Image 1 (spheres, rainbow, N blue to C red):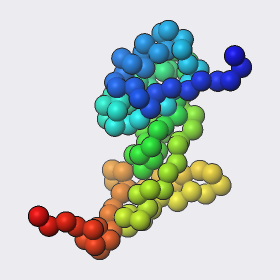
Image 2 (image 1 turned 45 degrees about the vertical axis):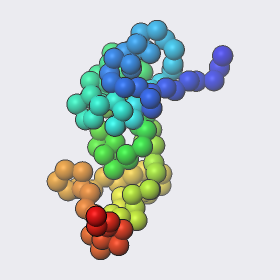
Image 3 (image 1 turned 90 degrees about the vertical axis):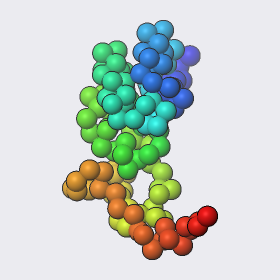
Length: 123
């Protein structure tokens, strides 16, 4: 088959990525930050992918994944969704197809509290 296969949005931890790469069932991986196990597990998965010389793309959570892709040795594509933009004080910008990572502490995410308050539920 000539069509490249990418897996990973349903990997639940670095071991799933290792098994997929060890068994050569995909050409690339795209871990989901939440399902892979957060930042630490992402970094382990990136190391595994590097040892297999396999490209890594991201799946969702672009505001955090953008930072992780910068430290992923075999980084390929950042999956971009702007779903959080309506509640962000300063949404990330995309220029010529590239996400501009803010030069701020942490992820650079600040929420627009006035928007969030509109949707607050008091029980």
